[in-house]
Image (cartoon, rainbow, N blue to C red; front, side, top):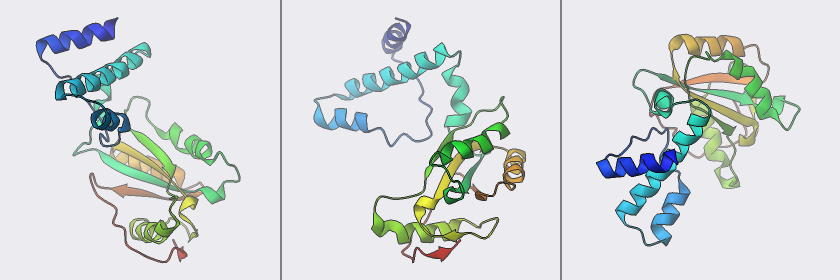
Length: 203
């Protein structure tokens, strides 16, 4: 198999293929392998390289090159990041994620490459609701009046590798959506600060 041959060739040359990743800290399987099995550093490296090659092979079947995705997967000092913030309670459908997808996806340039991460802002820990509400108030300035009732009301879409012109296109096009709260433009590597607060607040 091509993937196996590629791994053997790389190992024989002593080369380590680069891994482009937006977030390398959340791979639970590697932690399990390291903690629960007798593994050497070489074993761990072989496992990581095998997983990387699986990705390369899957992309190749779709006529995509892993290296071409670097700009979307590696944080850039020049590319911009945004978070599109939506009010899911404004959508009378459990599939509100798809409804939001249909709003923002046509705005992408098909020639560009980006990472897109989306999901609910909510938490399963009720005691964290105050923290999330305060963090939201500090970070987000709504484009229209909204009442923050619960963290699960907020749906976030993170997009990286954007130019100012791309951000302007998203902002202008999405202002027409009644469900949209705002486009939140954040600098690379910034962190959201969490502090206790009352969760029943105006956005």
